Image (cartoon, rainbow, N blue to C red):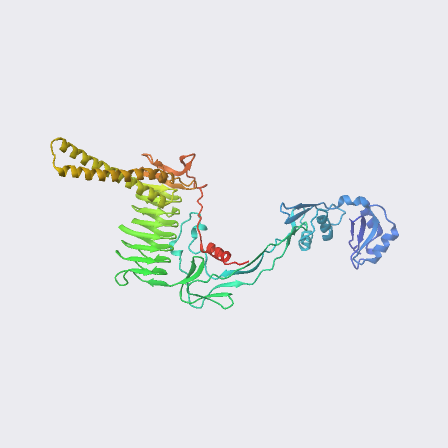
Length: 560
């Protein structure tokens, strides 16, 4: 007859015997149990007590004898509390032979001894013990972050961060075909809603310390602007017309959108209070002006585009010396050639900027296959990033970096005016000198004297203007202090003929060119260092997005 198995183990100061149900009688003998007890070093117990436990055979543990020394066989439990006291782990060693594994209550007690009394996950502890996950730190307690309470908040049902791929793609190639600044909605579409209030809930650490919840009792409201309708209770904002939804001056507006196939003699010039989408070309000599965004699907020639917000040229512009682009936001293009650009945001170009004049308040980033800046003049308030600056044919390529274009323009204008005034003074003095010589040679006609007096008066006025400009130029020069954050990156080469100015400091590329170069201001001078594609420098994009406007609008309309 096969003998039934039995469990003999130490737990909580006692030796226990468990006989499976149905294993009664002669199938397990007292001597079998006693032999195992002797092997494990357990104290002796009477034969009658063993028989009583064996005869019961009910699957329940039966105490046989106290054995304090058995504690040495049990698992050790090491508790670790996170630095912020928001979680705790336990590491349990495997029990030695003769000891039962710890119970869930044992681990809970061990956690309590180490002051872990809140957020204890008994289910996680049970899984740890059931799987026998020994000697492995396991998270078994978590605190709770407080829930910030607020009365109501606005949820916008349109994209607040459109057309900003550079925020997610660190100098990866921008696919202009994927950009779209126009978010067209129909009349009646829901644009924003007021969400229900959120009740504050205190948090706690695993040690039981309460983390008080903060509460914002301000009352948010939906910032309704032009061509939108706010519900009578102020909880929903809908569009009143078909058009592009966006933020303007902290308000949600729906602006009309003009969509045309081409801008040419069939449409004439476009001057529009809203956004303009041109699916095809903008022909030479035509003008597109919009208070919102301008998007052009194909090429632009000798034309003028002016946008209050962003300009997106899916291809680019060849202005032949008479193309003009101006925008209050960002400008995206595949290429720019022989044109003048005024961009108050950032300029992103895929392939090349050639023989153009740039005034950019933010950064100039070229990140396509070519990424070249060839010839021309650029004044950039932020940084410049390209693969190649200049050409192997030494074309003059000038970049002024780190100073706002209006400051550079004012300084250059003052210097030009001063040079012109000095030239005028010199010319008048030469004329006066010739008259003086004629008078010395005997020309006593009164007309010579009157002419000289008139020239002297003009010279005095010109000298006064020159002196005033001479006093003004140094003050403007002091404003040419470049930002220490601005850099110029030429991933491949900076050709001879390239000139980079940081304020009044100038760097000229050597005859052989400068390869893989990063220029920056350091200790009062321009410092050149190598470009490492594996550890590239960083450029910070600091600008307002529609998401920022939404936050500002919500806080601006709050009333305590």
